[in-house]
Image 1 (cartoon, one colour):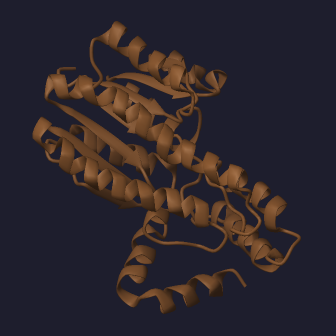
Image 2 (cartoon, one colour; image 1 turned 90 degrees about the vertical axis):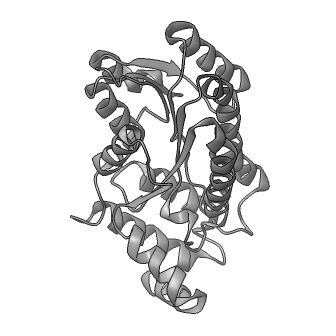
Length: 275
């Protein structure tokens, strides 16, 4: 394959990250999947990819991962920053330590890995950095303040980075998924109920838990991870990729509503869904 790329995908042990890694391997690229759970990436290895143990908030592991890929392949053409999770719970009841960890994983870990990769892309005068944001980087839900704060931050961070790296022929691409059928809902709901399910915010917490369960379990309420994998594969192939790919259930209508109808109407619409 003449357009074979060396690609690093974080958060590749499940969901969108795993689906994307498998698709890119199938397309003939050299793919390194990285995640804390190496045992969950053995299917990537069987498919012809590589599995790296990586916690994005571990500086040494970040350095080792980049050094290993450079030693083995001599370059990194594409970085897909997919690792992340959602901390939900009221602002009042969420410990600042939990909020700080949310930023460490979703922003600072991602940013540090990007810093380590940029010099190699700059030297070869080409590269693509693909940041997995969310429709939650443009909209908001109750009890999601810390998660939405990281995704709003990622949007602004990516926009500035895009301008900085343009002279070096490095593209910065933002993916904004809507509701995607992954582990996201399960991982988010239980801690949210633990923090806010019994106190002054219990009514909205129980409603949010039900709304999330419905959106991930009802037929056709969420989109398959393959939708995101296809968009990423398309962006990698494109000579002039879009700056943003917004796709998946609810992503376009909710962001449109938030942008054009204003805060008060959007607030009412959101709260009508979590009564």
